[in-house]
Image 1 (spheres, rainbow, N blue to C red):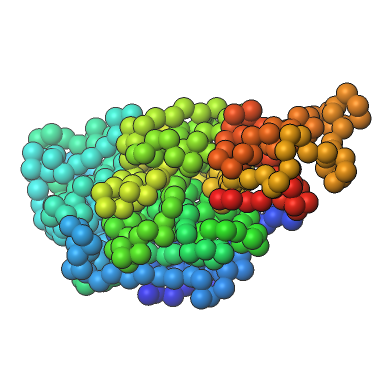
Image 2 (cartoon, rainbow, N blue to C red; image 1 turned 135 degrees about the horizontal axis):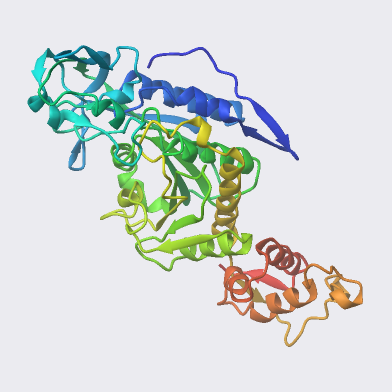
Length: 451
């Protein structure tokens, strides 16, 4: 793996919390991050370095590698792709530099085969791609991963300058060699091997909101949750879309039952309502918890059934013979999608942090939901005797929330079959309030945790 100098993560304080700044986004942005490439390895190394900077021990950071030609179920790890040089110019009837040699790598469709020759407009035309919706932007095209061909990506404004009767010179110097697909896993061990997985992608060169904001969200979650005691093990995956998830679950296939829930995030750095896509099972705890946390936060959102909102690596984790309930959270769609306009300038880091906070609360529900059973008491507990009575708002209590009423519902519905989240969701109480009051009932020995 190619080594880069250790980079500096800019941070700012928000209470006791440190957050990676947009510096990491800017450093990752221009890398030629594709399925298998030197720059993809560099991105994985940078993210692993970021996890270490956040205090994750070396032994909890893993890079799973899969060599070219290895079968990942029905998928095959492709060759490593190296794009060395490229240009496109019209040479007749007039000379026009359409794609200059110093243009960004997005100007060549991913995994394009080499070409170096004069070519007529008619022959070249099927290999040219532009965005009619974003005429000044370069589109992101990735259709040649497994179908050998070549393509140039250019703004429509440049395409319109080409003479349909003209002749061009097309140059793509690319190389295909044996390499390795790399998947980064960061583990925060819990009391149990039962795991909650947060997935994000590292691919899409010269794209930021698409994929990279999901990776930054994962780092924010690691920072927030690393020091907290957990029942579940938290796992964070960083890899190229689809193929990386296939590799990761090949590694864990014999142990796949450890994964209880998973979620995928990307496209969370631009304004707009959230898009929550439910798991294929539709009504599991993760579906309900995410809905509750979005609603309780007051965030605008829409929701949809599995594979109807945004299709990504949840197709793998929630797919056949894995069946891990997996949601996705994004702010899809946004205008700059899959073009060179998706750059660091469009990302609002506070929006990424807001999404991270919502996801952190969702994970907290998954990790801490439990069922309480009463001991040998009956009727209504004498709370004052145990120091558990909370004055109602009209009698000197907290005017913002009626903890007296919340406590009454917590002990009334904790019947050995109703979970704390069931109570929270039924009455739309704050999750932290329900947890705190339930903990106090257990600490005083009035209730026990039965599940």
